[in-house]
Amino acid sequence: RRFVASGRRRVDSSLHEWKRRRMAVKADVFAGSIAAELTTKALLHPLDTIKTRLQYTVVPKRQRAGASSIPIVSDLRLGFRVLADATRSPEHSMKDPSLRPRSRAADAANAARSLYRGLTPQLVGVVPIALVYMPSYEVASGALKGTPLQSTPIAGVLTGVASAVVRVPVSVIKSRIQLGLHQSAGEALSHARRGGRGGLYAGLRATVVLDTSYAVVQFTCLEQLRTLALRFSGGELTDPTQLGTKANAAIGFATGLFAAVATEPIDVVRTRLMTQGAKGVGAFAYDGLAHGLAKASRAEGMASLWRGLLPRLVTKSTGSLVWYTTYMEARRAFNAARRTSADG
Image (cartoon, rainbow, N blue to C red):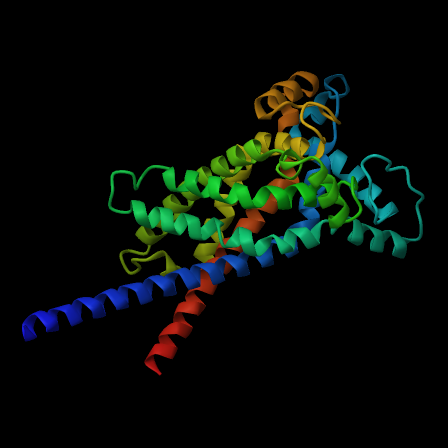
């Protein structure tokens, strides 16, 4: 009996230790995700605003010629127009950009306020999104580790689906404020509620496809680059958390670059679906993702599906650099503090 009791105590002790470690890992993942998201969103919101306004802009195929048909060149030309409009009034409106110019100081202040429109709902949404996005991937990838599905993109797919449910209402409100279609989060929310579930969740399917596609590309690149970095260490490093800041920054930057190019067409149509109003009517009259992709390519040319690529490249590559580096550094700091507390 004493032997059995002793064995049970050891099993209980091991189980308790396993649960404690699991909770500690979850805590450091949550802390890293929130710190990374807050930093990224606050720094890069103006570029996100420019990207949203570019994607909303329609340029008929007949007006596109020569270098103007190249997505990045077109973004530069249209981007300067967006910036010029932003200097005229903080209440930027894609419906009526004909606003009166003012002094340089007023222009600068207007531009800052205009490009930071929609920041509040963006930051409010950080916590719920962060608590779903990276932790979902860590849980999914951990569950698949050691199974035949480990090398498949299933973890990325599950992450994309989970995060889309949380991200869509935030994106709908943010995008409509950025475009000047509504002047406040309250007004945008009230308008979305009048549209029912389709209002607040406009573009949900497109967002699921976007987030799933982005997550698959992102985490596939992430895993490959992590493995490559560990291999280049010559066996000295065995875990991604041991990689230095420069390595994490390079991994984050490259990951964001690849993912942005691959998913830009979906993001363009998603933005338009979220801001057009009721499904099938409004500014674009898209019935869904597939219809939007086909209609945009017919009316504006295939290149239109990469409109806004330049600011999105900068946003996603730089954002991924900041996000992944901050995420890994926060995890490292959290784990170090936990070890210090345990030793004390």
